[in-house]
Image (tube, rainbow, N blue to C red; front, side, top):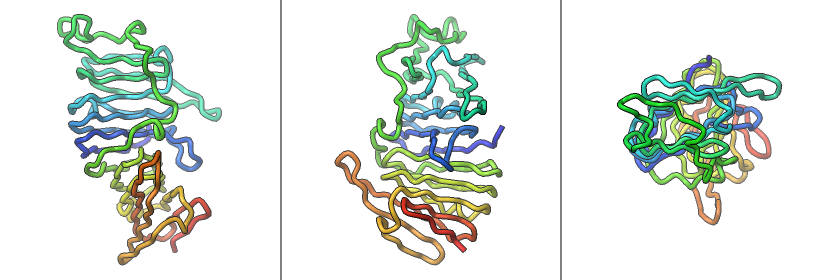
Length: 274
């Protein structure tokens, strides 16, 4: 199992963690995440073939949500106390990957599947807890009125203002940090492997702790080189621009330190730092 990438959410307004990418060079399958939430309504999108420990997300307050891409019956469900685990094996490009998510039962939280969702109720007459003993979720409990979106980046509302989500990469073989929802702010600390981060439109990424920790790291930007304003402070570069998404302007920005062998990709080419 790969080392877990850890997300620590400091935004008390709620934060959406997108743990999915099929972008070449930034694929998410085979990766593992441990998410720690805050008091807001946080959410995590579990990409196909990834592993997510969301117990620290669902146990910290707010009405949190977990999004799974398969139908309810696609998954094997296990229960340990009040901790639920859903897992399955998926085939991606001819290779089988274990997909898994774990979460603790907390009133008001929701788990979404491709064919519906389940709202967690512990205290109601038909709640999950029966005489203090938690029960498995049944297919008849699934509400088909809402389901997991196919594209979380376009379907989710912008992240409200708040502190940066801190990302720590523990896998020294290299990890891909998937694109965030517009309005997201990240501060990333890398490891000795070849790490990668995709800066989605309208997001802010402090990658100085990624590019300064070893390995041949890569940063992907969606605009052309000339789309960005560039500033330099010592050996720290910042590229930023304003983008309009759905009629709203968002500031997009990435900062990184110059390190031999790292690369910065644009829509029209890349720069290798030497």
